[in-house]
Image (cartoon, rainbow, N blue to C red; front, top):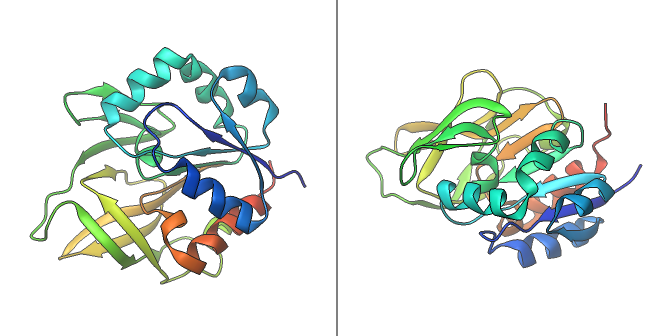
Length: 203
């Protein structure tokens, strides 16, 4: 089993240091990926992200990573975190309409609920479908910080309730996973999720 994890730096990922630290704690060898050639060398991919959907897609295009990512995230175990999960969707509506990576047939739209937005703090996940990524983490609490959500009806593996509003908190299609929460800020539960990710094997 290989565990060289490439954390993709595409200019809007302010959480790279904390994600890298958490992955190393979980047992991974980590490298920072800034171009398509580096993406070829890794066994697994982590897409971090803090910021807007539209800015993320512009930066991916400028860096030359867009085409390579579309190829690799479907054949290598991939984990999108927060914005990194959102850009895996087909389209986003933050500061206008932007095309995403299109792995999931979903849309990224504003969270509309009776609670305060952004949704911030620890909240539980309700695992719907058994998946190796969330093994042993059923009903655990993870740290969220987001104003937008992925709307998808076919690839959902976990949901979360916030002030009566239910949203997608984890998603999976093939080798590609996404979590709306931040494992790197979620204490032991987050470290366990990274351990589960490291243990994933390619199909």
